[in-house]
Length: 175
Ligand SMILES: Cc1cc2nc3c(=O)[nH]c(=O)nc-3n(C[C@H](O)[C@H](O)[C@H](O)COP(=O)(O)O)c2cc1C
Image 1 (cartoon, rainbow, N blue to C red):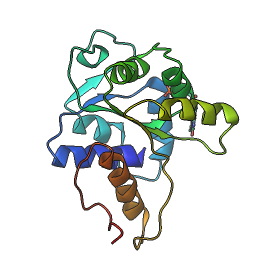
Image 2: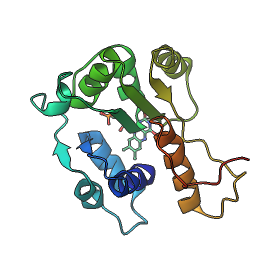
Image 3: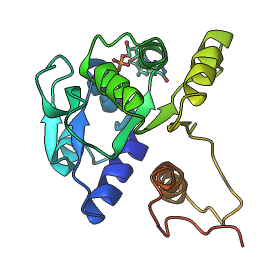
């Protein structure tokens, strides 16, 4: 969840229009993930240009005719991963992801689970074979002089936005 918050901060700095969906389950996870932070769900919501209920299919991002640069699911539960991998569009997250896939737009999935079962891995493999779908696990990196969690979060956000070809100086690239 802190990665999602940092991502939204970066996208705002880059003047990217953000349409945010927070699932009901994610709202619960947020509370736990932010228990040692001053940040709250409102921090996340305030950063978005548009905020949607996961059950509202009448909004812009539910339709392919609404043009976007793509979608990032961060963090992506194994339930949502499965829904997206199997075209089971039963909420706005999986429907919007389905739209990105059918229009061959960028779709970045940041899976959240460990250890991974063969079901999880098969779902990821299925998705990674689709054009413009990226599986970007939040794997920690130390080789660029990481000092703290903020450095790590910046590194992960850098890895996510690189999928969209966005330039950044969130971490020191290998030379
Ligand atoms: C504190 C907390 C942590 C969780 N962590 C994970 C996780 O890392 N991966 C996962 O797949 N589900 C996790 N879950 C379970 C999901 O929230 C649950 O499967 C939910 O149905 C996912 O729904 P969503 O994908 O619509 O957000 C967690 C739940 C709680 C309460």
